[in-house]
Image 1: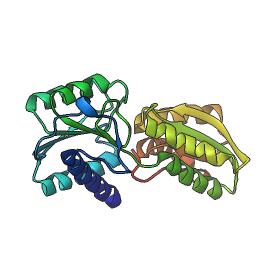
Image 2: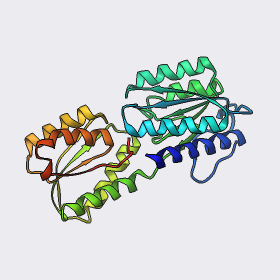
Image 3: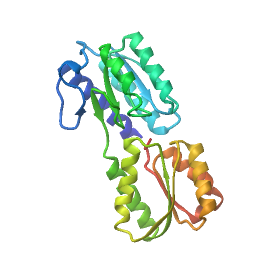
Image 4: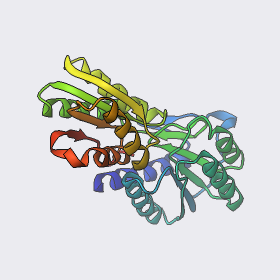
Length: 258
């Protein structure tokens, strides 16, 4: 979590400077150009951070990193929790437009669905940076390599299982980061022909639905030796589903994954 906070603080500082300089570097994907670009203020004085779900430890760490970055920039920061609700994020962006914030940093609940709100913000002169997952229309996107993360996690899981056995996959909502983690896991399966997926269902990225879908899959197919949860809350929900017999299961999830 400490690394997550430092990385996010560094990214926010770097992106703020890039926005002020109207330039980009190799690690930053930009989606605006020419007359479509936001009108850049001389200084970032106010920042809005929009997270998907504050109950997720990843976003708590992101919040701390953003607060550190805002302090270093000498800016105020307003942090809002969408509670995994696109309508909430739309409302929050409209409120930030009214407040005239200089910079919105958003982890989008729905990368396509949030596009009209981002367009409104940029038309009002607000810089919008998407973090952790893309958001259509954002000025810049900062993401980790989620495919590699899925590969590393599942390779470890399969090795702990001795290279054979049945697994469940607790998937999530179809945003790019989650899609990429599952892709990474599936890539590694090609190296482990003794691993078989006997259940694959999507949660809503939270503990409650992680518990529900894992319980449903275990009821249908109880002979399972491993579970891959694509983020912390979904995997913790899986833990609750198997806790009475936890010694018989091997679970893996990415520490600090949203």
